[in-house]
Length: 188
Image 1 (spheres, rainbow, N blue to C red):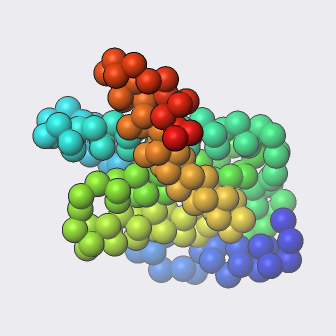
Image 2 (image 1 turned 30 degrees about the horizontal axis):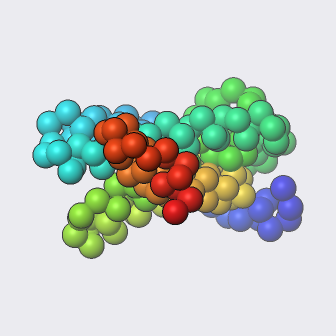
């Protein structure tokens, strides 16, 4: 963490006299949005038309990959959360675990990036981007992450979505028995 990271955190972290509606919005985004992401994606995966089901599966794989990658990176970096350093106000109870990168933000970015690759209209893609940015804001506003944790989570989520989108068709063709090895398809 550097001075800019700390200054941005202190600017974005909700203060004790922040409007109650703003605090409740941040809490709802952080606590409820992950459940809605998964529920909506599962609903499409189970009931949608075949192309939508395939994209929903890629969204779920992107979410899973982002969560696993974020957990692994947290164990590697061991960077503290703001409240562990006595900075700002933590508005949600949270264990004193590593905060870099933000798992919530990585998952939201993976969801938004992967879902936005479906044949959606631009306003829907804009809402997906806004939802990922809202998650990013909420984690800092609630005092659980530094902005650098958030930026890393956003990058990780988009990277995981891109990787799944890129590898998915090659692996699907391979599993369908087309006779090509997935690594040959990925490299061609």
